[in-house]
Amino acid sequence: MRIGILTGGGDCPGLNAAIRAVVRRAILEYDDHVLGVKNGWEGLVDSDVEPLSLYSISGILPKGGTILGSSRRNPLKLGDGMQRIMDNFNKYEFDALVIIGGDDTLGIANKLAEKGLKYVGIPKTIDNDLLGTDMSFGFDTAVSIATEAIDRLHTTAESHHRVIVVEVMGRYSGAIATAAGLAGGADFILVPETPFSFEDMASQLMARHKHGKNFSVVVVAAGAKPEGFDKPISKIDKTDEFGHPLVGGVGEVVAREVETRTGMETRVVVLGSIQRGGSPTAFDRVLATRLGVHAADMVHAGRFGYMAALHGTEITEAPVVEAIRTTRTVNPQIYETAKVFFG
Image 1 (cartoon, helix red, strand yellow):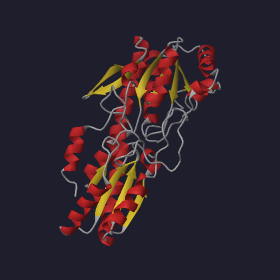
Image 2 (image 1 turned 45 degrees about the horizontal axis):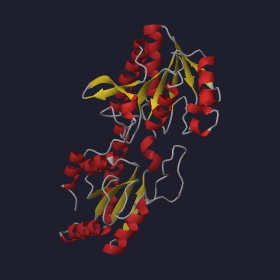
Image 3 (image 1 turned 135 degrees about the vertical axis):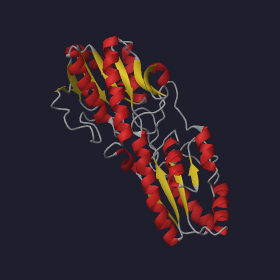
């Protein structure tokens, strides 16, 4: 068979491990021809494709990012974008594509399936906000990076008797903020799922201060909203090509409000893309590898329209249409556990 591999959306640790697994399984087990589509859907719009071999994937397991490149380009924004993709799909005589991405990338694949595109998916999101799988690779690495940052910021906050606000990724889901905040001993965690009150937060931080703790660490997801706000805080009032708001800046707002309401010196640290860069953790390398191997098997089993998924400890499958129907939110039990340590 002739198989194409495409990575779309934001980069995250583990993408290269997944690419490597698909290529090795496809070539060594099935004697397939594998081609890499460059820069997400852009590669199929612009006919930018290259062969992948055992040599070209050698040594990429621990590398962050994706050797194929990625983009957030939405072919639906182009009048002939969908048709150009299908023309190139047929031009390269693909039997199927392995699509590695989140709800936007997989959503485009689902629409193209109506035009005859055959694909299987591999879930990818550091926010862990994709349904159909218990966890996506990249999340564990992001949480590990954020936790290390919180650990380091704790010591400087304590030394200078400050409040430090740490802004982490999470447009719709507070999974990273909750897990990293819990692991790092945060004194308050703000997530998109629960609008927060500046007054309540300041009150709890002041109570903590009165009990002898003269420093605090607040972790806030980028998409967290204060009560009364109908959309996340953003420095730029724009959306990406898929209609998502470009969030960022809530950390500065929270820090300003904390300092004003409590009188405590406050600093803000925005982790940003640091969370999605660099080498994947061992967990993410193993998960991405298992998903990649299974995806190659799915192609030969004709499991088109499904994605490889983690359920419990087993790699199984889930229909993409179900995975993209809505956004997974933070586990409320984990957030309730984290709240035990607020203040």
